[in-house]
Image (cartoon, rainbow, N blue to C red; front, side):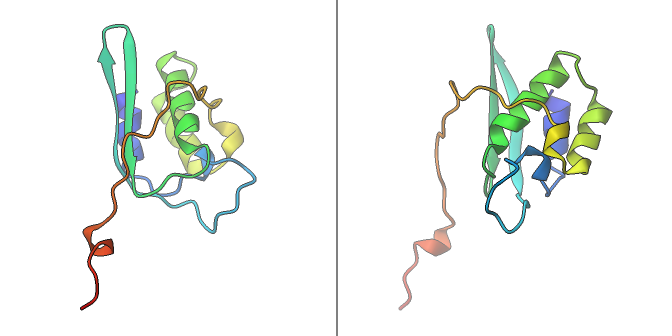
Length: 114
């Protein structure tokens, strides 16, 4: 699962993980982090990006969990990402347990013009 999550860092088009009927002009995102941490019996997924598409994180988690359960392979995961087809990705993970931990803006947004 971490190998597949790491693969996502090299991608920029996340259409396969976006809700189908969404009002965006493009599906490009830059992922800065994507990894799993096991804490006892709990798996925790961390992801950081410049933006997220509607439903993106839940779809990524659901697809990565399917890979971890052996329902798909790493090469199939890579093909799903390349396809851009939401129907190829796994089911969205349930929303409970999902939370936004922080929002960071570039410092340039805070600087005032003098």
